[in-house]
Image 1 (cartoon, rainbow, N blue to C red):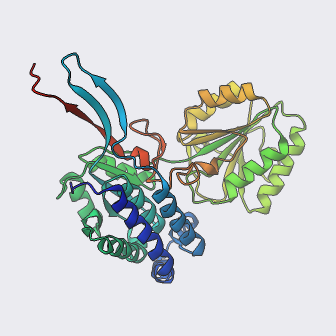
Image 2: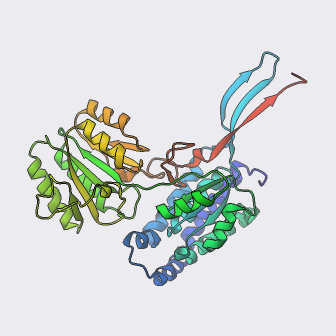
Image 3: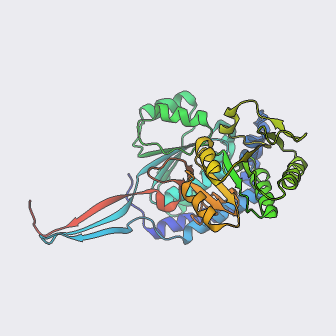
Amino acid sequence: MSIQLSLEQRNSVLHNMATLVHQKSELIINANQKDLDAYSGNDKAMYDRLEVDQNKIKGMISSLQQLTELDDPVGVERFRFVHDNGMKVTNKTASFGTILIIYESRPDVTIEATGIAFKSGNKILLKGGKESIHSNLEIVKLWHQALSENNITTNWVQYLNYNRTETQAFLEKPTQKVDLIVPRGGEKLIDFVKTHATCPVIVSGRGNNFVYVHKEADRGLALDNIINGKTDKISACNAIDKVLIDKNLPNKEDFVRNLITTLKNYNVEILGDESLSKYEEVKQIKADSVWYEEFLDYKIVLGETESNVDAITKINQYSGGHSAAIITRNKKEAESFMSSVDCAAVYHNASTRFTDGFQLGLGGELAISTDKLHQRGPIGLQHLVTNKWYIHGDGQIR
């Protein structure tokens, strides 16, 4: 672990990095174009996550700027106690030390995750996917420039340009101390890391998010919510894959037909349970296993449900534990739904697309955890710390 940097030093690096990303945006985009040209797959979600345009550059800069404005998460007092013998005891937040993030295709993670880890006093090891190598290395160059301009060693940010075999070897027997690993990607990546890692792992798991249209829903609001959640960004883990519609929704037939027509306008493939597959444009699901799937595509499942309790039960059985929303005018039913659904983020009359560290005021995110320890949901600045006990005495012995 390196000697802890002051808040002023950390903020200065982040400020410099925001300036460099603005100044060197064309270099980043040109490097990214090499990655896009080399990408030979047909995964639309992967391509979307891989691409860097001016909007993503603006997002990178905004994330860095928001981080500089946030309070220092290190050294925050959590507990104070004076012992009978006069010892003064405090418990304060402390940096983890070194964090390894293993991620696929998203060059913006090289900005966001590094910024959050660095601001919270952690050294970060970055292991990106081969599909984004040019983009990642260009961004890491800028991190090293920002560090050097502040007379800080570039060891705070390291890129591990390893293949799968080298990565496995590092996970099983790290060549340097690693205090925490965060895999951010598909289920195969997560399983690979969990199988081979020899230090704590926080899982950034699958989405498979649900919207429940309650019988007292505002139908226009429900339609807008579903369309936004499904079509705004199909590659996002906070996108919607499943919709449950209360069978007692007034004018349900009109709502369903309007929803189907609108989804079809966005070229969304629609699957449905037995009750909703009667519509010509809806294919009946062939197996219940589809309820478990995260699509990351223009694909959605519609189902009918008996009640709030029925919706909660189904979501808790099939969802990825990421995000779920209820659309209703009934605040009591909304509170029941939100307290009972076992997801990291629960919504009332709002889109699940807001499950994002930057959108929720965290200055970005390292990942979105579907674990319950030590942090659930977006892992932001204040979550990348552990704690430490400080005891001051004047000769006490036990």
